[in-house]
Image 1 (cartoon, rainbow, N blue to C red):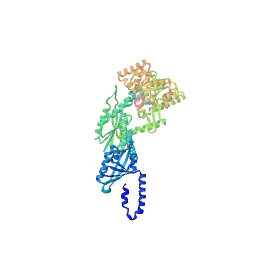
Image 2 (image 1 turned 90 degrees about the vertical axis):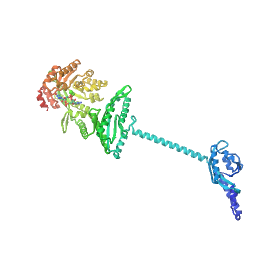
Image 3 (image 1 turned 180 degrees about the vertical axis):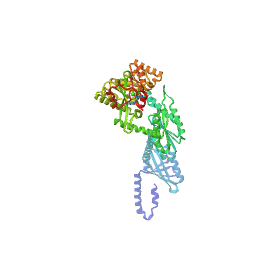
Image 4 (image 1 turned 60 degrees about the horizontal axis):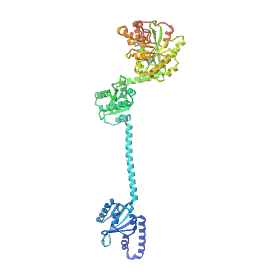
Length: 609
Ligand code: C2E
Ligand code: CA
Ligand code: CA
């Protein structure tokens, strides 16, 4: 090998003896090092077909031989066919350049095993100037496999990162969107509004707050699938009505909001809102069914920078739109805001009033049409307002209804009526039956029956007046069942405001009330219109046939009273017979046991005003 000849010739002659020993040591150390490193060494004179291989080379190539000279072919044929051309080309390049040979290739052992080799060689001129390479070669299979594994792991990790990112994006999308319609949701919308306050893009912004008018009914009657179809359809219709730059979001069950930027004036806004309203009132075909909802829209607009307030304002406008009869567009105004604030305050006061027992019954007498004897009282709610004095139902019942307090008012009146009744009895009075008004919401309260049972109401002491409309809306079985239970407790049922526009004989037959009360509107006209008189007469006739007694309301004059008695009414109630009065006044009236004085109408007007 080259170490021997080359290195020996460079040692000066004078130190030859000692150097010989050192040289041998060096050589031994080198051989040991090479052996320990498992690096094979080879040497090749160009032009010669032979290559000098040391033992380690044979071991690396698993030749099973030890011959020092191998043919060039032994080497090339050991190389993996796929790497051979490349390895040879690199060797040829090194020869041409007379420089470093550096290559990596696979070899195939005689047993078929594949090993990865690294080969490096230096160019030198051998004896006689023959161009030669001396090279080292070692097995890098373990490194290659390790690298390959690392690369694989890396790509797996990368793929996992991509998947993670994708699912992250999906989760984020889901968090920001409504699954049913695909529209942005409340969260997304709120964020967009907040951004509007920060950025200085648009100048003006408007919010259209849209609520479907009859979604609940459709959902209840036609099923959830129909409801879902309706919502998806609504989303599509609204989207179609606005431009790409605008945004529509679903922020609640059947609530949608549209955000418009720089919409170009109030008139343009009105047009867009009207267009959406029209689109939403069109029929939707769902299987064999035709669904139709309609919508109410509240609109608010202002500086884009103040967009944060717009949602609440549009909500107030929507509330107003629904209050005014639905299927319409209402704009937010400051007056609307203060009105609603006033109502809200009144509702708060009413809640307080209920707990402080400021809501009390006033009693209006009902008399027998022939004898004029008092046979009943109607309890009518009054509010002893601490500042505003005595308030009539017209002032607070609508608010009570809007804020869901009607049933509480009804209950307060019933409870107080029972207390008043006991108080009268303590004073030796035999109180007539007391009629209390029952709202639909109270009748629908599942706890009503239980609550009534606890009150220990004496039989036929109390009568419930139900407005006619209740039965038309819900003639469902459970309601009729409840009414039956109420009757069994000894509480008679009367139909109030009969003939006020929803007259339903079917309801009358189904409900079998004890009495019906002919609406004031009908009664008032009987003295001037024959037709009205005939109408009232036929109501009385039908009631007779059904074994239902009749009370006329709004009896304002003696003329009315006489006429109604002649037509066949059983009872009379009205200013002509008595005004609603406090419990104390009523007690005095009942103990005096006198017949109600009938005053003339002129006197009556001035007395009441
Ligand atoms: P309603 O049940 O039809 O009661 C009769 C109303 O007509 C009473 O008005 C009564 O004061 C008035 N009235 C009586 N006689 C005459 C008359 O000759 N001429 C005229 N023009 N009016 C007469 P009020 O007390 O203001 O009550 C109004 C409505 O408020 C009641 O109409 C009833 O629907 C409702 N309401 C009153 N109290 C209660 C209650 O405790 N619960 C519920 N749910 N509603 C109540
Ligand atoms: Ca009534
Ligand atoms: Ca009435």
